[in-house]
Image (cartoon, rainbow, N blue to C red; front, side):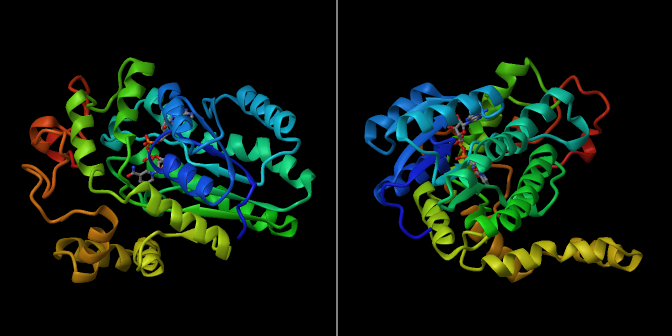
Length: 340
Ligand SMILES: NC(=O)c1ccc[n+]([C@@H]2O[C@H](COP(=O)([O-])OP(=O)(O)OC[C@H]3O[C@@H](n4cnc5c(N)ncnc54)[C@H](O)[C@@H]3O)[C@@H](O)[C@H]2O)c1
């Protein structure tokens, strides 16, 4: 897709962070942008700036809500979407072994099933429209690796990426292009979603408090600006690239991230991975990590990050217990707990 003028675009999670940046960039490119989100106050804010022609309250887990939204768009605009952007997502940190069912369901049903709900609702309508089109989704760098303290998220992101690749292949004959964007750290409000999860579920096996959310906010304050990320997404759509790693060394980073796979498949490979883990990170690894995270990843985690968010207090990772199990989880050995 190279011409966005008057294209009908729907962006989930469009009220904040990456999705809001996408709404701004595609609106400026001339598209009619509709945002769908659960946060009505932020929807209203974005619509008031003119970055979207309308905002709709939708929980991406709600399949009836998806169907109603698709019908409403056809009634209002006379046809279905040209571009579907699936960005809504949530996150929470804690040891994999402390994951409970409610935590697992909250993350995977929004991150993975929420994307599948969008594809299953809109793909048949886009095919029937017969004008080609595009689908873009904000995945995550987490899709390319496992995460001992972010397991359901990484698993859901890996599934999201895999699903999108299958759709990329399947939809080529219909001239519907699919792009999956895999950023690492973004300057966004995603740290709030762990508190939303506690509100919805009551509790989690993970230690989630106002302070763990604040600490996470200091990390995200260093992340990529949503508009910059949106411009990477737009370029990938224009160039029909499937996997968009929004960094200068993107393809090299992917090669490095996947290097572990053949090594995990043999005894000698496992020994080699252990040998590497005992070494300090290489100059290239440090460069890639800093590019992705936006801060000095070698800085000690006992105090503030190099550049804390202006409005967040300096927090001690150890005291806050970020990435740790909830206090009442009695089977997680604290000496084996890792930071996220
Ligand atoms: N922040 C990061 O560092 C980071 C890194 C990699 C990938 N991502 C991904 O980027 C995407 C956007 O997140 P962000 O970082 O901009 O966070 P954000 O919280 O600023 O924006 C996410 C939006 O999704 C909405 N949302 C949450 N649950 C929803 C639901 N059930 N239905 C509809 N909308 C819902 C939120 O209200 C919010 O407006 C997510 O998929 C996230 O996993 C984020």
